[in-house]
Every structure is written in structure tokens, then in C-alpha cells.
Length: 105
Image 1 (tube, rainbow, N blue to C red):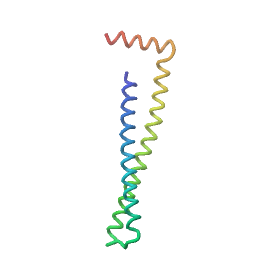
Image 2 (image 1 turned 180 degrees about the vertical axis):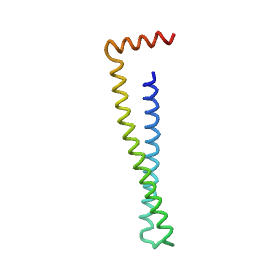
Image 3 (image 1 turned 180 degrees about the horizontal axis):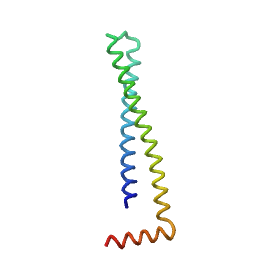
Image 4 (image 1 turned 45 degrees about the vertical axis):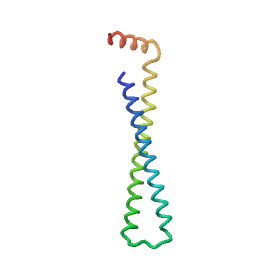
């Protein structure tokens, strides 16, 4: 049961990371469009241009961290699913499930 809970928690974490990645991609796209729209105009100040670049850099680094964590969680999820299948299979898995049912009562 703990491994099922871990799998659900891992699935929830992956869903949250997917939402964060999508939000970061959207923000990155908006900033890119803003940069392209303002490319023909001279910036009012160097500070506004550098702030935009800083925001893009921060969004990119956050996106990279989120993607790295997403990849790690995906690998962990595959491993846990394989481990669950291994533990449930065969005669030892049957005995393990029966013992768990008996202890729940």
C-alpha cells in the first residue's frame, strides 16, 4: 500500500511539474513576443531591456530545473511501477497480498 501511495504522490508531483512547465513556457513565449515587438523600437532605458533579459534568464533557469526534476520523477515512477509489478507477481506476490488482507481485518 505504501508503494501505491508513493506512486499516487509521484503522479501528483508530475502533474504539478507539468503545470509549472506549461506556465513557464507560456511566460517565456510572452516575453519573447514582447522582445520581438520592442526590437524595432529603441528601449526607453537600458534598465528596462536588462530587466526583460533578467526575467527571461530566470524563467529559462526555472524551466530547466523543472524539466530536470520532471525527468527524475518520471524515471522514479517507471522504477516504482516495475517494482510494484515485481512484488505483485507470482506466488510470493499472492502470499503478500493475502497477508495484507488478513492484517487489515
